[in-house]
Length: 225
Picture (cartoon, rainbow, N blue to C red):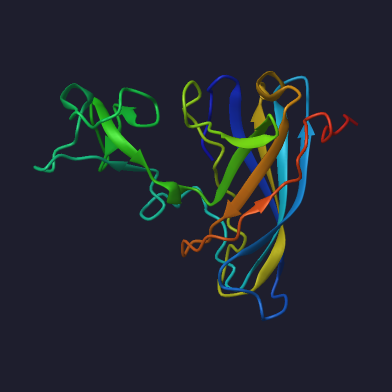
């Protein structure tokens, strides 16, 4: 999971509970159902916690911290026709202006630090859980895109491997995926929200997409114990 510090966004966490070897008729492509959405304010960063139930035939769900090689590599470095890295000072007309998603400062490429600002493209397969936010205005939902200015970030992330030994076993269970921020109420206030979620297995099979109910933060607030 990636550390975040954009306008109060802190980090992501996930917990997984699973039952191994349930019935054999589970699908190869993961199937999920929406279970819960909870807002848990605290004295520090506040949590928006998504709960989903899952079923999968092979049990190849989850990524470990060492899963950073293709196809799970975080970044694809952009190169010119001669195979050279494209730097900001020599960017072509179609390259984006500087932002922390499309450009990396002093990245390591093939274990060598490049002392420059290099054009990159984010690899979506570095993640295995995908979260999209929708906000209702004038009766219509529109996507709230965290990757756009001024945030330049994402709440997509990773949950850990469900099986740590032999794969090829059917699994079912529940994932609680928490998104921590000090800015939920400042950004969304009394807005009506909807959260859409998908997951992906290590064979890059993407699940069905599920949606939360239409809610406000106040409606899903969990009281402190």
